[in-house]
Figure 1: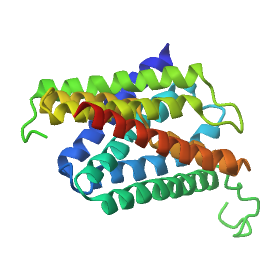
Figure 2: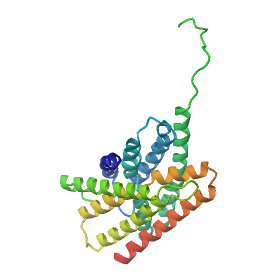
Figure 3: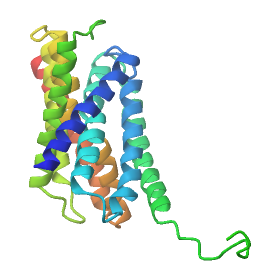
Figure 4: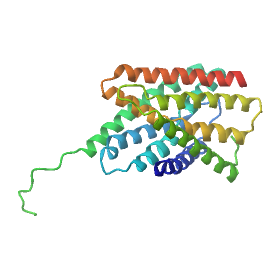
Length: 139
Length: 126
């Protein structure tokens, strides 16, 4: 139940952030949707970072994963806006722009999700220093 | 998109997005990801949400729904129901687990079915 409440709150916040990006970078139905591209790329990277890092700690509660992962980042990013924009761009005669947008979204999103997973994993699992480099003089 | 948004419209967009998120979360719990298999829950919400977005945009184009309602349904509900970040991360996790066929399938099936649903919804209802 707590996880559902966390998703609800995260969903409100993520939708608010996405709406703010849409309003800050408005675009017509026949123009390249930079705001959607930015939120999707940023969201994919941040979720990868968390899944590779914080999520792997046993102490991270499930409601927090649900609230931030499914709620905040899940609602911040959107697949429907991408695919609907591809359809709208295509019917307004911008088929090449539609194809470019779809390709940049998919390739960029997957690349950034992969980069986020690597970065999160590296930072979370960096080895503890086992050698004292200053020979103990400052300790 | 209207230049000035009424606070009530903004609130409705956020609530619609939150409801969409909860539906997505409930479905992803009901259909948990089995290792090496396609993440069905996210695939279903992304295809259904894209189809709904196309349908709402089609209705908006023939003025069956106004700009505010379009924002609530498309940006709010469909935006909250569908997700891009989970799709990307789950695809890379399939790839990292050596399930490259399932990863490629997840990309192609999501994009092909989602596009087909969005196009069908839009073209049938505009």
